Image (cartoon, rainbow, N blue to C red; front, side, top):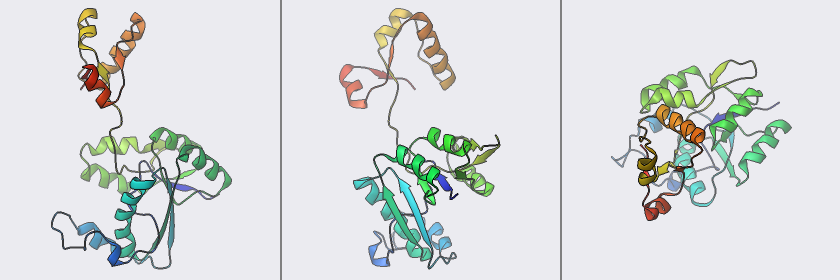
Length: 225
């Protein structure tokens, strides 16, 4: 059965079709705002004639953005990369892996779904050296390695993907007056937040709320952390 490589929110290398230098937004090596070492290193990989397939949730503007990055991979290596996106990614990737038609790389919005597929043997582990690279080059690198590490069908942990294009989608907000009335202290760590959540449930209260930033600001709520 064909398995998929995981990119927990994507594995940087890849997506779309043959790209020529003229399609690159920035000429390699000419814009000092970028570090071009990775691009130059990719040139040592001759992938002409190779095709890589990627499936993910990104459409419209997000699709265009990731393709603009992947264009450099294609230009440096000569590979052809086909990216396809779907707003029903979660359902479709489960169908594809079970049918044996998984992509080479999948872009998972939720690590939980990736962990589930890894436990069923549908994902291919990355080289352990990738974990060392993430640990050395990402801020809080060990935490990112942990988030991309899942147990396989035999219960053994492996690194299946690394994070790219991470967006902060939601925050926890609270009503200061309610906390003061009940006597709850604002948590400073994730452990304290979990403990407070459990305490609120035991007390039968519903003081916590997760809402959008604009809605929270309009309501005069404050953010935890």
